Amino acid sequence: VPPARVYLFLSCFSLSGEQRKAILQQTHGKTAVWFYGSGYLGQTASTDAMSELMGMKLVEATGLPSGTVTIEQGDRGLNAGIEGVQFGTPQALTPTWAVEEAPGVNVVARFEGGRPAVAAVERDGSRTIYVGTVTAPAAFLRNILRTSGVHVWLDSDDLLLTDGQFLSVNASQAGHKVIRFPGPRKVTSLPDKQTILDNAEQLEVDLVQGETRMYWLEPLG
Image 1 (cartoon, rainbow, N blue to C red):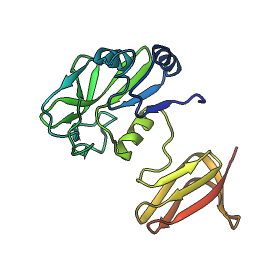
Image 2: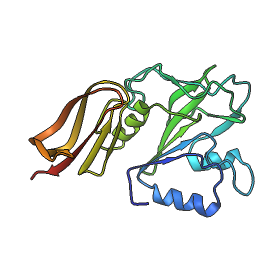
Image 3: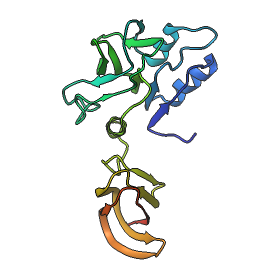
Image 4: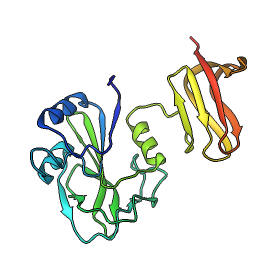
């Protein structure tokens, strides 16, 4: 895996000691995002092993009616613009882990009843985020990327794919889309190969639901 500023770990329930050590080395100085149950299984099932991996204390929480969580109020970066948003699953999660509140632990979202469900902690120049449920809204993921220094091309919940030159956008909803480039670009539409912008910082386009547009971007300067 090439170096990145943010790593998302999905369904990483079982990790060996060697894998844990390698991941911590690879993500040093970066942002690691762990989802529900990550690292619980190793040689044994261990909540303490999860806590060590996350860098924050996790405890088993009982009696929670669902895996639904609510974003905390207040603009702290990770929850900017999505305060009060609910996500997760209406089904109860067994087991469920809550984050123990402590100095240096930024609680982002809580389970019903108030137990911390999503939190972030920084240590030794690295940031770890634990998401104690099984989904996350795209707006929250964008906040993670933006606060980690990653360029966010599009602020709407549409599918955008790019390697920096080829770009494809598919509209999950109809509307006006603003695609922001990391620097000035010459923009050519595909497949007709027509130059539509010579020196632009962004591309604005109106799309109907399900429509896909493709472009070729040439950096300038």
